[in-house]
Image (tube, rainbow, N blue to C red):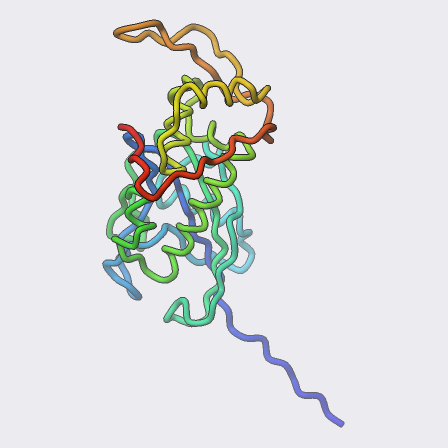
Length: 244
């Protein structure tokens, strides 16, 4: 009796990056204009195939961050998001993508990578609404990345990753409003933040303002898991746009 020989399928492995930042009080995601087929000219997430068989996945993510956006990985939050491998997601063959979520404050204007014709920051709500067509299954990956950020803002100190080294409580509120896509009552938000011990801590001199009292400055505290959590309010569909 002979056994059938099993031939492993040909599978290509890639990494894709959902890079989020706040620009003008709105959540933005980095997109590139593809300069090669398939989907030449279409918008997509930055990313690419592994350079060689020995390249580690996280090393490939770091490399793509440097190539696509000239970013120093040490200055941003980076975490594994998910694996996407539905057959037919890429016309070049069976491609499995490992996606990462990257977050940092005040990211610079992007630089297009070697296989991209251009790169730009795009408001995340315009991607989520379907107003912009993305290549491959990248809109789904963006949806997962934004929802991951929204959920983690409730239970973790991720919001501080969108801020600079020091920030005001108003700055922090703008993060929650931009990521959640809703408006928050300043007094309630202030009480919740102050009630969560170790979330943020005072950070030296106050910030000068043109009118009114100077704003107190804070920095990220030692607590990474928030208790009590910053529960996301449920607002009707006609919720206000985040303030500018």
